[in-house]
Image 1 (cartoon, rainbow over the protein chains, first blue to last red):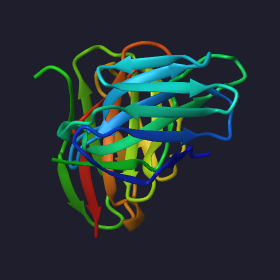
Image 2 (cartoon, one colour):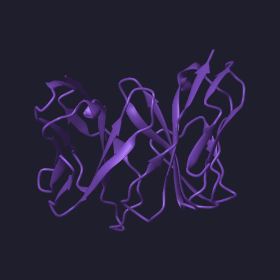
Image 3 (spheres, rainbow over the protein chains, first blue to last red):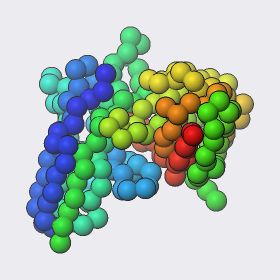
Image 4 (tube, each protein chain N blue to C red):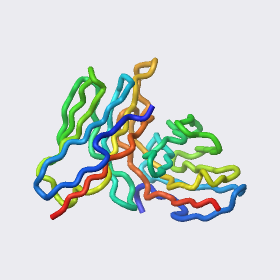
Length: 115
Length: 113
């Protein structure tokens, strides 16, 4: 089942912050975050594994709440280059307790940053 | 060039024709994936491969066939194209087992008339 992302779209001014959420109805092994610019391929941002960890990449960070099966992507002090569509991809636990990298992606969140 | 490439980048075909989309990667990654991207659906996994000669279905495999005789190539074939298969197709690869980053190719825009 497809994870649900919210909001569907965000409009920011440079320097403002944003949060994008990703919720799943399944127990998750991992959550992946990707960004895609119009007409281009998705680019990997980060992976979060079970354990409620938080990761950071420059001014973009993310958290994973294992109990709620939710992940949030935090973009601080946004830059024009942050514009694009953000996708979360989720992988549920399987019977073997292993990961195969088979992701189910959310519908995406369109982020627009204006000068 | 090094990396992951797809060909053709654009393809127009007629309903009922067979079409093969090519994917080639130069990293010797074990894991390869095919996704389709449609408005309102995001990215959906069609097929997945863990190694040469090992493939498995994804979320939307009907109407598609894959093969992987060599590690670096992962072609996707539409046996009898339908209008509902009009989409952008992305190939991706991952070098390590499990939950690791996937590197996406540039995509193939396929139109079935």
